[in-house]
Length: 216
Image (cartoon, rainbow, N blue to C red; front, side):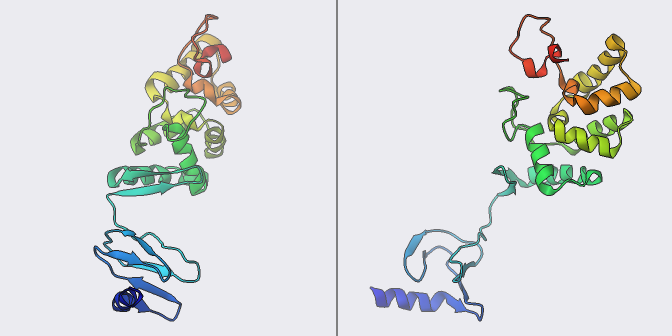
C-alpha cells in the first residue's frame, strides 16, 4: 500500500526550490506526505507550503467572500461589485477597508446593531443610495471631516430611508424646534441618531426606544 501511494505521488508532485509542490488532481483523492485528505474537485492546482503546512484556497466558486475582522460572508459577483463600489464612495473620508466594511455591515444588517433591534434584514448596499445620503449630509453644511465623525458614531444612517426618515427628521427639527443651520450641524455631530428616529411613543412605550423621539 505504501508503495502504491508513493508511486501515485511521484506522478502528480512538482517540486520547486522554495520547498513547495503542486498537486494536480481534477477529481482524485488528494494526499499530503503524512495523511490522506478527503475527495475533492479542484479547478486549479493546489499549492502546499511545506514550511507552514497550509493549503491556501485556490478553488473557483460562484460566490466571493467579503472579509472583515468581524466576520466573513459570501456574495455573488454582482453583489460583490456593488459592495466594492460603495467602499469607493468612502474615499474622501480616509477610512481603512476594515472601517468601510464595518460601516456597511452595521448600516445594512450584516452584523448585529442594537440600533436596529431585530427589524433590520440583511441587504446589499447600493452605491446610488449611499451616495445620495452622503450628498444630502453635505448639503447640511457638514464637511467631509464632519461626515467622517458622524459615520463613526452612527454608521446606520446609510441604511435609513433618505426621504422618509433622514430628510423628514431634518424638516421636523427645523419646524418643531427651530433647529437648523449651525445649530443643526452641532446637533448632528453630538447626536446623529436623531436622523433615524421614526416613532414617537409620546410616553406610551412602543419598545422601539433606539429609534424614538423620546430620546431627543
